[in-house]
Length: 220
Image 1 (cartoon, helix red, strand yellow):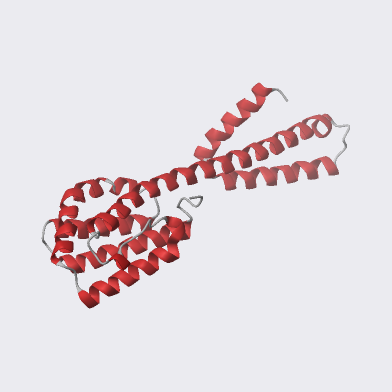
Image 2 (cartoon, rainbow, N blue to C red):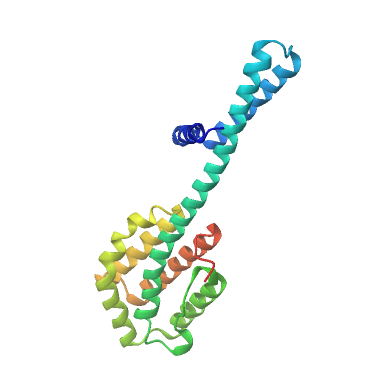
């Protein structure tokens, strides 16, 4: 088959994928291929319609299916890479919050790298720190560090809502609540300690959703 014809079919598939669900289109092609095969089996192969046109149509169906599946797989992989990149961009701001605003807490409660691949460790670390806050509270220098960080970063995190909206619904909800409590701290609307706990709970929610959907860099 000529390269030009393959490219032409590929462009047609791209257009159809935008207009029609790829799975639905695959089913249509498979059903059509089945009936063409049945038609070729039941009728005289010396007939022009059966002997010439039917094999040509079957070949087109098979070609379209192959191109569709390859294109769909490529599209899924590209979309996955894009979402992982967006998740990583948001995660970097969460890591910055955990490391920078909480740098004055006792050494054993400070956060490490907090990468998506370390989900179990991340959740354990957050739960342990939340329990520490509930039992011991936070020193004034830590409270001041958290507030100053929230004042400086609240606008940036709010602007990233559009990025979070491109991930899953749970990611977006978690980010909305993180932004809400960061703004509450920045504007002195709610107690810093309780708002910090709420932020940590929603960071857990964000991390859990990333792990569940495998939207994280796993080759670090």
